[in-house]
Length: 229
Image 1 (spheres, helix red, strand yellow):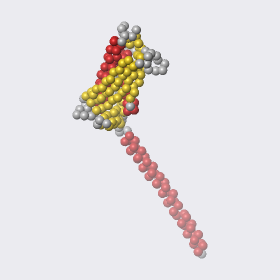
Image 2 (cartoon, rainbow, N blue to C red):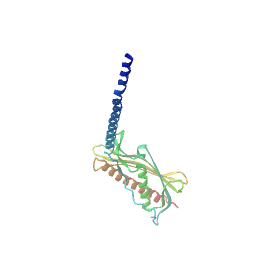
Image 3 (cartoon, one colour):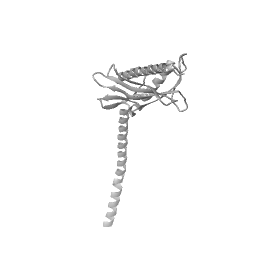
Image 4 (cartoon, one colour):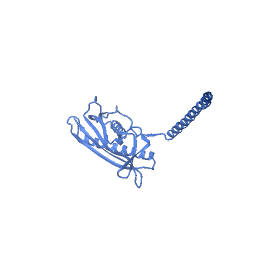
């Protein structure tokens, strides 16, 4: 009798709860899937709220085929610019005091500043028509002189009024002798018309155009006083 009751009780305990145990995991899985879907939706919505804005410098129109009758009979090569890692990336840099620098997360350059300034110089040298040829330095291009530079500052500067600082230096090397025959240093703080990023970008652009024009004029003066035969 006891064995029979035990057998009945075991069958009763074994069959009743099984159905409930099967339904519980299914409900838990549904709740978990719903929670994950909501979390993914929230994260996706937050990520799309701040689009990145890109800016670029004004580049003179290419005029590589223009050569004036009195052009200097040399082939100029424009080399890259040496600079810190900040100006080899696309972040816009601001100064927070004399020693601290920061970068904007959602405001960036279309290209690294050092590369954009190199392109501005290349185009402006070509546009003058003062040289037989002007090319970017490459392994398969030969030339008589190479101009290369260093970029020290290209940033927003805070103070009583917002401004944009550009500091750069260029050198000219005679590729036959290896000697540096000319150099030009430029630094200037250009006042910004406002405190937002577009105003700073416009001031940096204006400053670069001014600096590169000054470099090109100084280079013209060198070749005028040192004729090349």
